[in-house]
Length: 287
Length: 285
Ligand SMILES: Nc1ncnc2c1ncn2[C@@H]1O[C@H](COP(=O)(O)OP(=O)(O)OP(=O)(O)O)[C@@H](O)[C@H]1O
Ligand SMILES: [Mg+2]
Image 1 (tube, chains in turn brown, blue):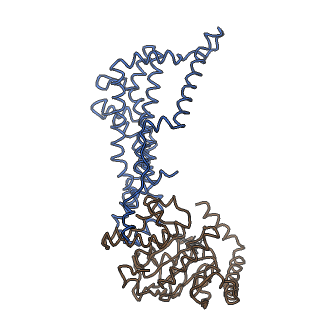
Image 2: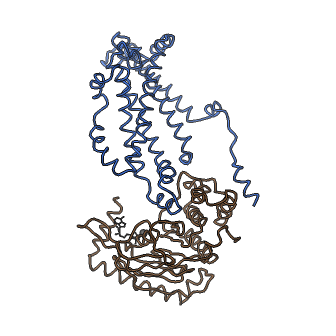
Image 3: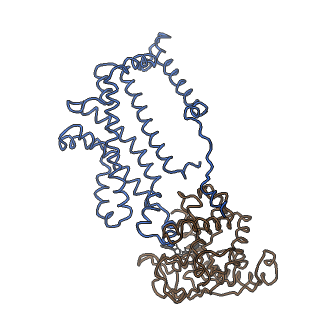
């Protein structure tokens, strides 16, 4: 990988501290505490995976760290500075594709730098082509997002984030909804990008295996209101490959995480008779 | 590196055949033509039915057959008054329609992006919206100094409400992730408006335009009939039908109806065309 233009921005991986953060949604009478006194640390240059039961507040954490929303109480800092809003130092790859449908792949990728005008147009063009090439979309750069397959869309979105050289990459279940084969390919591809850049990454997923395969540490969350139940250090060596998932070491990690998640699921089931989740899911579908 | 740079400019374009060639070789066009001919033949048979069998079925044969309609049409097209009616109706439709777009699109966008604006203007808008445009005709005739202006006003109303509702709905339905992604990349409020909200609303703008265009034609024709093509605001296709009817020229009524069909089709084709040209990303299906 030849060096991009803003070397400094790339070379200082970020650390994030989430300090006693609480967040609730809804008006008084139906107020729902999503996060309560959450403490979490994302270490510099590491890939931290966050797993938890569905609806426990993972995307809420993402929105807070990205600066799209503000915590009710507590602080979130990156490299010691409080996060007050969205910024180019943090790029999010969303659960659903957020590529702009009216722009071609190329134009989506250069959207940020062009908007800010902080790159020489020729350099930008070269850099964009290089990154698009890295994600293997050279032939599709004049296509619109709807003309791309699901996997290609994810890669285009990765390219769009990468060209901004963020200190922190935030991935919110980016591979959800891809078919199994594409998903594996994307995991490998993403892992490769990470291992080359060693950028700080926060990767939210509901798939334990995905988390173990990718991450340096896996943070297991409890039910809503989400708190950290366990942090599992993944000591599999890098560069990684899928074979490592069948080692006994990986199996132990998996069982450990599964046990906690199972407990959490059971707890929520006992407390609510499963009704809440059912109604929640139903309400989501009806929206 | 230089290769990569070049390939950005060298967007490959398929060779363009002439429009005529495209139409001639288009199967859809042919099917349409055949369907229209078949329809006209059925109509002819239906209209001639009574004469053929000598049995009276009360509703058959009341409508003049296409052969007579086309003969009448042939003589009508030679009268400048007919074309004047075309011109007048088109002029009225587009005047009202364009003013409705010019006022309706910014108004709808303002409702969508500004909460205070919405809280102030949406309630009265919602009360005025259900009033059918034609209910405005008497008030409008009293209010505006000329019949022409009152027709223009009622026409404007017909399109305006539809346009605003579509723009508002379209702008509010824009995925918040687009806005968030753009914000992360350093977009200002103005950037968000220009680069996300505006293109994101474009499909709804064209939907509103297509529906609005249909309503505008309805309103113009009705207004022309009601105003009786008075002294100041004569003619128009609506008046053409009305006066033909009063004069008992049934063939001419049908000529007027088909003319309106064609006029409406041309208008909506124009909007569809503009839609495809300005939204290339929607041309993929
Ligand atoms: N803007 C909002 N307004 C009201 N409630 C919200 C909002 N965002 C999230 N919630 C609620 O907060 C809870 C946590 O949502 P969140 O999206 O963070 O969960 P998640 O862990 O990402 O779930 P999933 O696995 O479905 O992605 C859910 O019950 C959700 O309904
Ligand atoms: Mg989520």
